[in-house]
Length: 259
Image 1 (tube, rainbow, N blue to C red):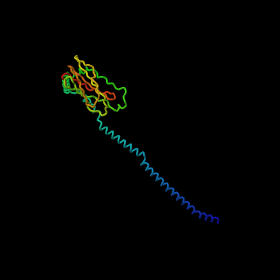
Image 2 (cartoon, rainbow, N blue to C red):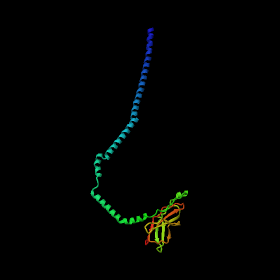
Image 3 (cartoon, one colour):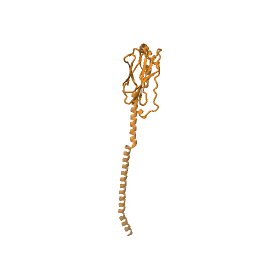
Image 4 (cartoon, rainbow, N blue to C red):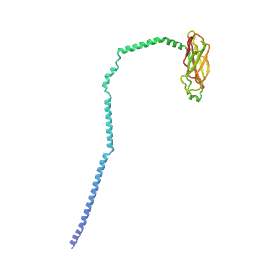
C-alpha cells in the first residue's frame, strides 16, 4: 500500500516536472530570441557608425586636400619654366648692344648738343641777368591768425602783363589770375615792386612802387617816368584780409624799344 501510494505520488508529480521543464525551455528560447535581436541591433549599429563616423569624413577631406595639393604641384611644374632654361638666357640678355645702336645714340647726342650750342647764347644771356637780380622782398606770415582764416586758401599767383600807354615814358601794368579759386580769402591789397638795371649790368634792389587797394580782378595801373636805356623788371604780390601773402608773380621786363 505504501509503495502504491509513493508510485501514485510520483506519477502525479511527473506532469509538474514536465510542465516546469517546458516552461523553462520556453523561457530560454525567449531569452535567446532577445539576445539574437540585441546582437543583430549591435551589429547593425556598428556598421552604421563605421559608415558615418567622423574619421571617415576626415579621411575623405584629407584625400581631397591631398588631391588639390597634387594638382597645384602639377600646375606649378607645368607653369614654371625649368631653371636650366633660364641659365643660358641670362648671358644673352646681358650682352652689350651692338656697334650701330651706339653710333646712333652718339649721333643723337651730338645733334642735341648742337641744338644746345645754337640756343645757348640766348639762354645764357637770360640766365645771366636773372642771376644778378636781388631776392624778392620778404612776405612774413601773420603772428596771430583768426580761426576763420583756416577755411580759406592763400592768395593766388598774379599773372602780370605790361603795355606802353601813349608816350614811351608811360607804362600800363595789368594783372589777373589764371583761374579764380572759389575758396580763396577776400583780397586786401596788391604790392608792386620794380628793379632797374644799371649801366654796369647790375640791378637795384626791389623797390615798392606802391600798394593798391584790392578790387575785383582784373586790375591795372599806370606807371609814369619809365624813361631810360636799360631794362626794368616788375613783380606783383597779393595780400588777403587776414594779412597772408600769396606767391609772387613771374618777373616781367621791359627794355627801351620793347613792347
